[in-house]
Image (cartoon, rainbow, N blue to C red; front, top):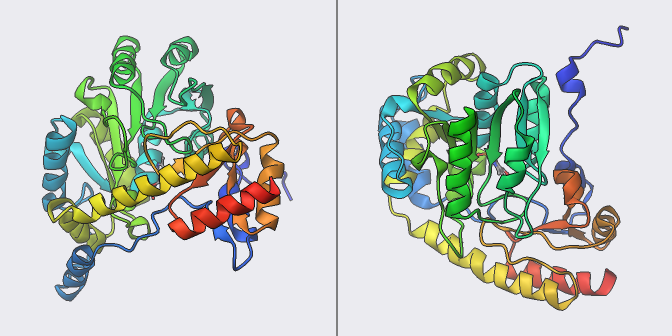
Length: 370
Ligand SMILES: Cc1ncc(COP(=O)(O)O)c(C=O)c1O
């Protein structure tokens, strides 16, 4: 058998470390490892999907997505994010995951560099590697937001894009408006693209969400209904960018996916245009859990920066792989920081998308075994 049966790209990527731990957990384990809301999709959204099925809305849609949904996305972006785009500058995708993949595919040739927060969401460097690009780590500041000075330092003639993820996974950190404005100016000056992954935008407990696309045209804004509306399994997200970007990205989308799921698109219209009380309820619940978790962690001697957003805490702990293993043996699943990049060392990620009861039980176990 040839040693080179598989591509360089795929050989340079590992299976997600988060899944591995998750799958090793016992049936009674408290799962603080997972990155999805522990809420059900709101009823009005489910009803819209059932209606779509009953109406026979089960065929392919336009590649960019159904126009009602793109109109709803334009309204949302204009109202909440100060981003002005036309419906042909919006593309509905199979979750933020697809949007990230196709955007990077349209930008990265072999050897091109992409600046990625370290630690950061696992998919970023894996996608760049699959494309035979080079992932370049950007450090975080003490408050765990992206270090804009380090971005500037790491830019080379090969740099094509920088990934911004605020609120961030795994840190929960929210970048300041001044940092996002500065990053936008850098993107314009250096002619590089900001890929702005905003999937946790609705879960901000202090501060405000700022989209770089309000300052620069060199931005692909990526979002999804997955986290905001407890719709991870529905696989519906979107990207928005100027027409020159969308025209190129659409080619990848057409051959990869053809279009997003038709039924999920109808449900997404209801999610965006319908009542928003479920989002507010989820956010309030996450905030209560965050407060209990972070206080608990600091009380038991695991220093933890107060995360301003998302649903993750990222406390410091020496020997994080060992700590995660010990916790797993004691039926608590967390993710070692190293799963998110080398700079994640000496941290664990704890998801508080779990019940308050489970969070309190997990804190008691941590106090005992760590
Ligand atoms: C930062 C970030 N971006 C994107 C995604 C993927 O989102 P989706 O489920 O919409 O593909 C996740 C999921 O965990 C995430 O944490």
